[in-house]
Amino acid sequence: MEPLTEPSRITSAFGKNKMDINQLDLRPAREEDRSFCYEVKKAALRSYVEPIWGWNENEQKEFHRKDWDEQKPEIITLDGEDIGTIEIVRKEKELHLGEFYLFPEFQKQGIGSHFMDRLIQEADSKVLPTKLEVIKINPVKSLYLRYGFKDTGETKTHFLMKREPKSGSHGH
Image 1: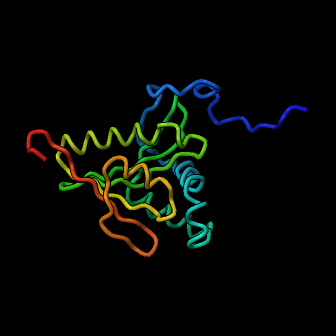
Image 2 (image 1 turned 30 degrees about the vertical axis):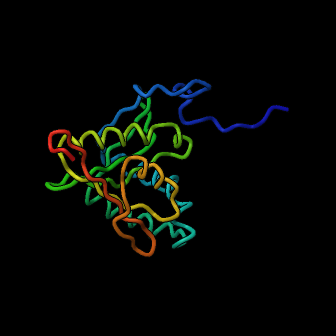
Image 3 (image 1 turned 180 degrees about the vertical axis):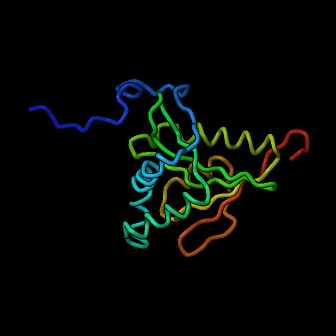
């Protein structure tokens, strides 16, 4: 008897072969991406939110609506297919990473590292620190630690993290 398998969102890019990092790209979010952005956030975050606060669909949609109205993320694409979101808030004195979500089947494959490399390169070239918050029970914190982020504080539920820029010309 053949096992039942769900078709992957993207079979062309993954299959049994290693993903081609050159197929990754970003595009601006458009109004019609609103529900996609909610679905990827829900898929990536629900298992960390639910044990702490429970999951109230209406509350979560309202949080998403407020975030969306404040700033739209960029859409992460792989071979032209939407697979996640990343939001980088560029302020005068810092960069802030937020809304960085991938569908679970695309996690732990180097995609997060690819976009972290790009973010760190931008931060270092602008000589700006980068800040983020991460839910305490989310294992993605290990990725941020590998990129030189350090704990700067915490709330009841989140670690606050910061990475100072590396600059060859300033001797840091």
